[in-house]
Amino acid sequence: MGSHGGREIVDIPPKPVVDDARFLASAAKLEWLGKEEHVGSTLDQLSRIIKGKDEKLAVDAVNILRDAVVKGLDPYCWVEIVERSLRYPHPKALTKPLWGVFEAFTSKYGLPPQVAHDWWTSQGVMDDTPFIQNLTYNAVVLSTLENQRPGASKALHKTYGISCFGRAYTTESLVRMYDTINEIPKTLGVVIMPKSGYPFLHHIRKEVDGLSKEFNVKCVEADTAGELAGRLNNVKKHHIKAHGKHPRAKARFAVVFGVIKGEGVYVGEPGQAVCDITKLLKDDSLFEISPSIVLVCSSEGTLDREKLSRQFKAEVTTPKGGVILVPDESLTGHPAFRQFAYKRQPDGSVKFDVKFYYLDEPGSYAFDSYQRE
Image (cartoon, rainbow, N blue to C red; front, top):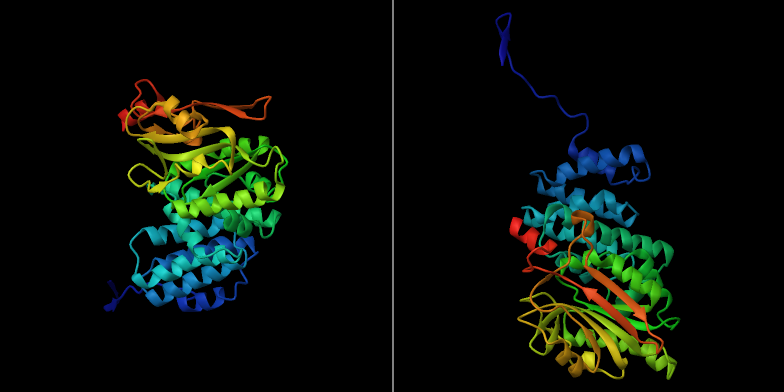
């Protein structure tokens, strides 16, 4: 405020060229999609309005973003906007529309709404950058998979329970799994993991991809024993029952991510693992005689590997006991495992040689990192 020639002058902020309501009316036409020079600025405006104080306009902005996602907006453009809006304090009226963006993206491939929620609960600790990267990678791998194999994501979800398409998988490993749903071109093996938690599964894409190149690997995701039994029955239906006594029909190995409690094996994280799969690992209608079982599992106390091998009538590979860590190589420079090797034997079996990082092992990557924290 000032004066000029005895008159009082009031500073008036410049009026925006286009107000938010008019901008949203224009953006809703989605004419900016496919025009690279307009996408960034439009998304910036939508993001600003979503974070603004006008709830009605914010909801309208989210719905426009949802429509753009359905029309093919690149996941790299929208995931972070939606994720940050959901994770940080926001008006209650925005929660459902924001979830609707993820659900609209997954449903256009025929996937149920629960898949979008599985993405969220599979992240573990919500560290800012890794959390956004993992959600984005789920969306990118899903869209890439569908571009290469239309309908693959729905088939993999229905058959094996896969929801988090970018968590432990590359697009290539998912394509191989889809292409061999009803075939047995190589030795069969199963990888069993929980849907929820276990954020380090994002770090094992290289190992799963390597296994899928060498063997006919089927990855199954489940959070309950009943659900897992159904997924493994699908493996049996498509391979063992369909191919009868073919020498590669039954599984020669299993890799399990979970927790060992006493003589039981559970899928899930320590303190949350409620899916007891001990009986399923003894299923001789699924596994060949004396299979290899790799238990990538933390445990309470010291493990007796020989006792576990006798219990499962298998060649069991397991940590020595305690809490294991699986580092993210892209952040730490350390691979997920000290060693993750395997070799097909003359009799058709598969022998594994896996070495782990331990939280309480002095001199190890895991111990040193934990001590610094």
